[in-house]
Image (cartoon, rainbow, N blue to C red; front, side, top):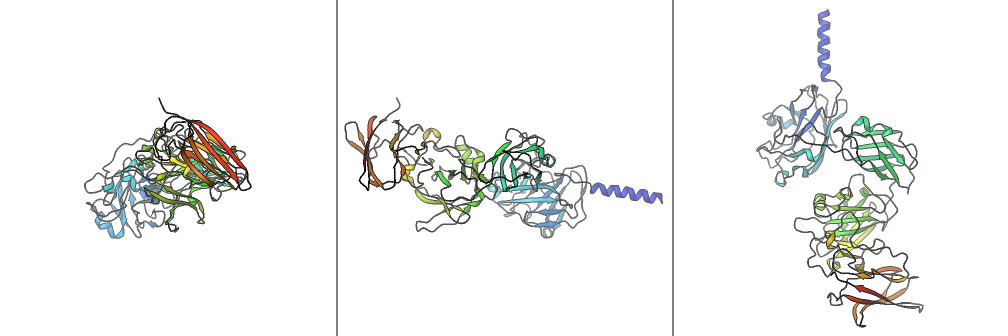
Length: 571
């Protein structure tokens, strides 16, 4: 009897070792093929490879595999031993993959998107053991990304790493299911996690987004968070599955709409064991709906160099916090019909007052080709609306389809001094002046690298809100496209609507050299720009010039003003 009890106890302990408390990353997804066609040497079907990276065997019965849309359950009583591989596939493909190693088939095996997608492994208890969000760019090889090749993890000891730990298979067959990966190598992950942003889910909940997965225990410590002014520590902090790059904070008191808060964090540990560093605070607040002119187009590159990419820069000129995932870009036909709109991003992302956001299809190209680019200021879109090289119309819309801003650009807005427009962006001069005013746009300066994505424009002008009638600045300008005083900006501010005016440029001999406009109906305030060229688009010689302004109102008021400026040259 005692022998039977002892044997039963041994059997129980043996089985319980397979049912011990699972930990994140005990079993990892180490290889998969999102697009199996055209086949290179593997079966023309998708598979996912698992590796047991722990020292414990795990029974996978009732474990689940998901693409974040549908989940399939393992019905087989199978124990994955330490340091062992297992190929997962559809039931119908098991015989083909058994030639490569141990294989388990699933009914309703989750489909894998060719471009981007999620793969999530759940234990029988519903715990996330490993989750990845992959992109086609992980292949780092256009030919292999087209199909038939698998993506392999380089270093299974660092499964929390994303793109930097994955690459296209080097094996001639297209992959290595059931065995050691062909790209196997030791990878380094020395960087500390950083706080990217904090988005209000509602007045009593904040979602914090980090650039690396966090240790769940440290993420749950409320003493690691502070919201100021006046909120303090949250009452609860929860790391959010499946990727654990987000933390939800429940607050003690509601956030006030229209108020900007600061979130700071400390003592948080990443899955790589590093404590959070200097990137440990950010702004937050309640986001409001965007209305017309809250956000404006601030810069546009529509004629990039060969192998380059278009981009659009937005500027929040309002006092609101606005969600980017509630905004759309759309082109417009000359007939007035709006083309298919594209959502800026599905991710939680806000643009705060006075901030810039850059939209492009290739963030890496922008970062590599322009100076001082702020990577966190870029949203990489899968598709940007078409931006023709000569002229076009681009619109920013809210979720209701209302127009926030509309830019009807033309390549003739570029400086006549440019020898080649390719690779040169158009920059807005003043955010508070009309979007479609020719005088409010100019070419980015040469010494700014012909573009200023994610930061202040090289040719931006000072605010004209305090001007009365006419003012010109700078008094000395040098139109040489070096980014410093390349234009003379002529600001006007009328005492009331209904004024008209004419503006001309004269040389010191009294000869008119440039007519900027005759009998124009003026807005209450606005801006003109002189580029140092005459009416024939020839560059004028250095010297003194007179801006002659004639203003009159419908009730008979007249204002004549002469302003002397200097056109200079570099010695």
